[in-house]
Length: 446
Image (cartoon, rainbow, N blue to C red):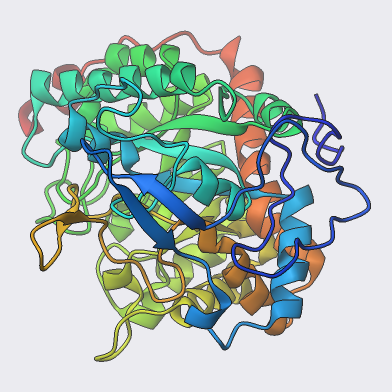
């Protein structure tokens, strides 16, 4: 199904979000009909705390908290998101919920994503208030896991996301292709995609890579905060100087499968090597502009300049430790600065959004002063998944066109997915599944 139609009228969860605390709903755009059969999403209300029957009052999106936001721009942002919602590159809630509940999805026992929850960044009311229409759920693997442990942890996460989609059929819909993402949006559901957090999940096995693809994984980061035997991480001591011969074969096999190559946290040598080798667009699922931060793992300008040739996409993270500049805490404005920079260097067709809600370098909820669990901090103004309209409003105030906003929020993500799918169709008949092993290709190095 082509992604040309706005949200269908009468869909049970159409994307016409209202301001959380405004006195009246935003006017809906002419192309988007009102939702029926669903309560309007708001950022205020009560949520049931994990393991208790106590209501937790939340007020996550009030104008008073952020008086600098222009209400006219926020209304305009909501109208734009009703037609072209957010396709977000990274959400870590599967691992966060695993730590909280052991992946027990019994309604109301540990959490209920249909309710706002002050201990999480993510809930369905927050996602809908934020205008999120598609989400990559990160199947996180802890740094210390390796070999069979890494694979089993990844399989657990994949199984959990599938179970989550089945548990909330009126909110989520599994999407394995770009057309299925568009179809989920038109049915008023949040399209759910799977992204593997690090290449060590495949334990240097192309057969395992194919198995993950068969289970629905459509993106995989080559590295994270440590190197794999075949690719260097930007946060680890270099081992290979880029990609080994087996690493090159991983790239070719991902191209054959139509799986997005995620270069977030890879070394610059790996970024350059993968861009030169890949026939499909690459992805930075949660990154930042290195020229603004100087931190390892962020994307330097010479890599951003290559994205138009490759067709790739840099999705800017909201992780505060990668956004903060100077001594003060990170803010919404800092995130907008990174988006401005990526658009300026790579172009509007190569920038996207990655909230990294309920995840990031840490993988567990933070403990508050009272000892209670609380969500990891996000930049001021982007405290939870309901806050995307405020970021879009800031970009509108900075002069972004509606065309560029539509690319940022929705169109760029579907374009790179379609690019990967096209590469797989074009090359699939000419290239058989690779039977290569790391021992045979890398030999003594391995």
